[in-house]
Length: 252
Image (cartoon, rainbow, N blue to C red; front, side):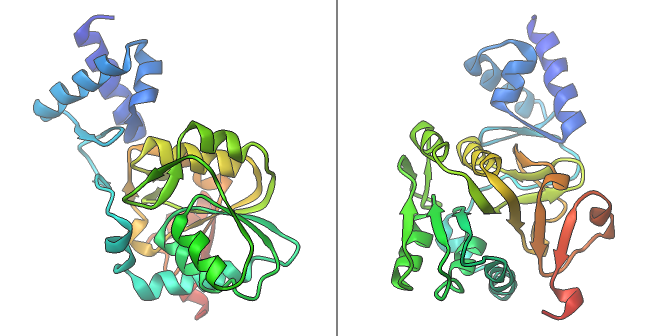
């Protein structure tokens, strides 16, 4: 495929989806990862798309293009995350076997699990520490540490998760839209989230209202395949596509 043909294919896919990862673009064009990255850089410089970590997003709409570190994110939407975390923790029964994702809203959930007798597996160093402080037994997934989000990622982590089958998985997301579903900027973190969801009977996504209408480069799960817990739903159209638990509506 010639360079201009690749450019057309890349722009068409990104326009259709709103965002695409490098891996998706490699599969669509048959080009190498290095070639796709060069193409994305050139198209970004031409003003035809926005290049982000792990892929690219279309110029239209609201896109989440940055991954803040855990400390910074923990200071945002504190009350909203606390309400979401409290409700999510109440969904955990003592006979559950639970996966907890890395992220500040899931960490807020961990604060309310002190009395739970469920089993826990997590890729979050912060969640593991908090659960241990509360006297809970928790298994930490082995693999590579991503310092900014304190998440365990990589091939070893993916293989580790294949050993388990969860009754419930609780995931964070950077963006939630009707078309693109739940998304995140980092391909390796997205792979972990997808694997955990694959291994779970029920998957919850914990997302405060600021995440709705945002889309990041890498897909986690379509909206119809998860239950999203939020404090306030800014757009009623989301209800037509997926299962939404809105806490503000019921004054929880």
